[in-house]
Every structure is written in structure tokens, then in C-alpha cells.
Amino acid sequence: MSVILTFYFLRIRRVAILERSLITLDVLFSGIWLFEIFYHYGWNTPFSLPWFNDLWRDAITINVSLGTPSTTTFPLVFSFFVVSTPLVAFRYITINKAFVTVSAIALAAFAIWELLGYQQFWCPCEYESVFGFYFPNSQIEWIGYAMNSISKLFMIVPAFLFYPSAPWITRRRVASWLKRLRCEDHDLHTLLNRRD
Image 1 (cartoon, one colour):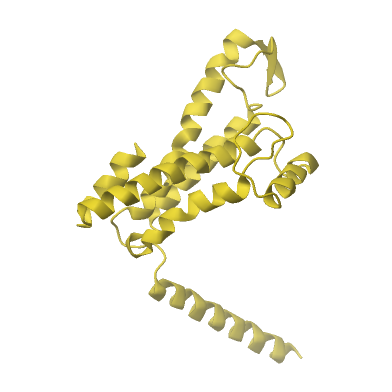
Image 2 (cartoon, rainbow, N blue to C red):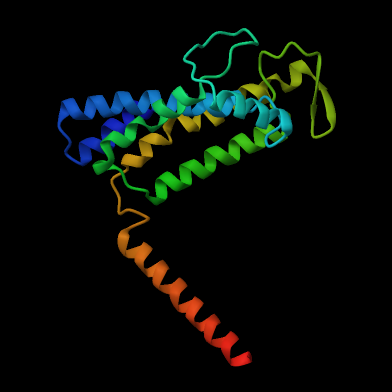
């Protein structure tokens, strides 16, 4: 899906076919690794001590191994490198409302999956807890399959960086935000001085 979306968005922008193909391939790998980062770190309770320990260990270890032994660390540095490679085509990138919306939906879907107990459709457990209630694995297997599929929205998030619309964050908008902050800061400063 990300291949089709990226190719289509870049076609609207009239990007040359070779450049379009290379960016599309780049976005495909970026989306896959973005999902893998979230999937890997979903196994521990987010923001818990084991989660931070794993994150720290993986952040200071340079590794490209995808092995399964417990001694093998997740290739976090390599993953961030792959996820950030679409930035090479920065002249076609815009932070737009579609990108923000799809990112928010993907994060919400993943958060719901975590709240449901991070169910897996291949889980060997006989019983799993869903909101404190225990159901046989056969009944909750579909939850794991559905949430795994919905959370794969992360794979199309990088494609929406190339969505051909007016950018949501522009220089003019940032300048107006800064101007508003300065005005509010000045008003607050004046108010405080009056009280003194």
C-alpha cells in the first residue's frame, strides 16, 4: 500500500520516474522498519524499567543482526537510520494534516493493542487477559490478528510525508506562532510589572 501511495503522490508532484521509483522503494523499507521498532518495544510494558533498559541497551549497541537469540540486541541505530532515509527527498516532504492524522491513528491503534494486553494471534497461551477478564485463546486469537493488522498503519505513515497538499507547518505559520508567544510573553511581563 505504501508503494502505491508514494508512487501516486510523487506522480502528482511530477517527479521523474526513476527518482519516484527510488523514493518509493526507500519509503517502503522505512515503513517496514518503523513498524518493527514499535512491534519490538511493545513486548515490555511501555515506559517501565525493563522497557527503558532494553531501549538503552539497544541504543548504545550498533548491531544489524536480526537473529532471535535472547543475547542478540535489536538493531535500533540501524532501524532509525533506515526509517530516516526518506528525508533524503526532503524537497518533496511536507508535514501536512494527512500525515499527522495517519500518524495519530496508527499510534492510537497501537496504544489500544497495548491496553488489550498485546495479544498475538499465534500465542501459545491457553488463556489471556483482556481488560482483566480471561477468555480462551481461541476467542481472543482474532483480537491479536486484527490489532496486528491495524497497527501496520505505521507502514504507510512515511508515504504521507509526500502527500501533495499545503503544508500544515509552514514558515509563515511558525512565525505567527512565535509572534503570538512574544505578544503573550510581553503582556504577561507588563501585567507582572504592574502588580509590583
